[in-house]
Length: 262
Image 1 (cartoon, helix red, strand yellow):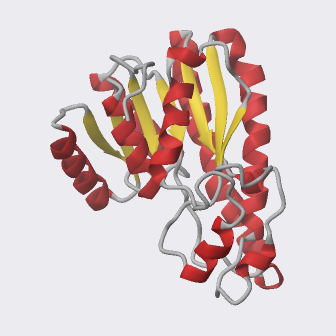
Image 2 (image 1 turned 120 degrees about the horizontal axis):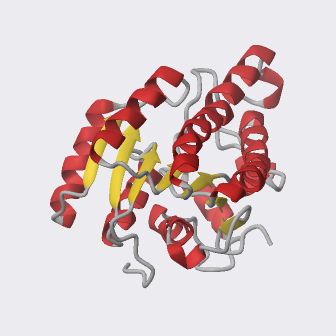
């Protein structure tokens, strides 16, 4: 997919860039003329993704830089490394998905300690990345932050879909993504005077090896295509928000779910 609004000469940091969704964002940023920085905690996978996508797209505009978004030292080291080669950071996509080993339990089984830790890792990590990158963008007097939220940040899960599947929609996830949508508006209001735009993209369910029964039931509620989302479905909205085509858009949440939530 080639968009009309390009990211020519823009440097975009994508946390979780080595993951299922992050790879689609990296690919589309480069296809639209930008340089994509894969910022990921998994160095082996990150470098493999960089090499694979660089060969696929025949480009030198993909780089890898290790980061733990829950560590201020790690975040600052990442940004120092990026700025050695790219003095201006044009965009940040908060897309990482940190969680502890107990994440994903049913509501009754979630401990207070695990609930707090997962909020700290995920929502707290997005806060930390945004705070550190925003300090650079304030100096630049420009920049864009895009937060990857979820439809479950503004609506309740449909738990009937999870019956007999062996998994659930975690309570932490709803709390994290709901908080992220509020954080998006807060940052848009607070940073707007510095020429910084902050928006969110809320995907519906993304196809990722779920059981066939879940995929079938979920897809029945999708108005467009009767299917779950694919990572590429989300990339266009992210590129739009990063580009100058959305230069007068801030504090907004673009829902990409094939009409599932309406």
